[in-house]
Length: 242
Image (cartoon, rainbow, N blue to C red):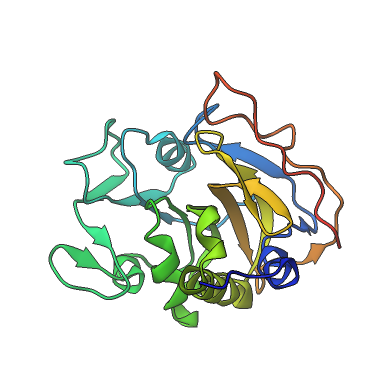
């Protein structure tokens, strides 16, 4: 284990640098604390969404359903969603790199139930790294917007983990631009080289083919953000350098 220099990690963290979206504002989707995410306020023409990893909170799903979208839910750790909605479609199955039915399906197979572009939210407790390290471009292009909760940033000092994580972020960056970043304050701040950042980071991505972007110098968290844990202060990320 040799670790990575600040310069090397800065290449990784550059993938997470948010940009503004031309002609669109942001909006909070979901609950006021944990389970709520900031996205681009643009859901026109979208009929379906996927929510992977729902646990005990479906506030994002309910908000999306209220906007007229059918929500396909996937979570192998629960028997069903904690709240019902006529637009919910739940399956007790795990997201994996490759499909091993019936217990595990790939993201491409999840999307096989959907028609046209979708929005998605993925919170799968660390499995996101291998999934997106091996994701194919056609699958990613299906997402108009995609929110992913990235776990275990402290492990970026390990070579094997860093290589997988770098590949995952590079893959997403081919088709999507980061538009929002928020630290989950149920985690801790960790040191990665010369950087200090949350161990769990929520990132919203928007399609490069659908939107245009501009550089911004917005300090994070923003006014739309809220601490996941309401009993503790939100996590400072600050302004991303150009």
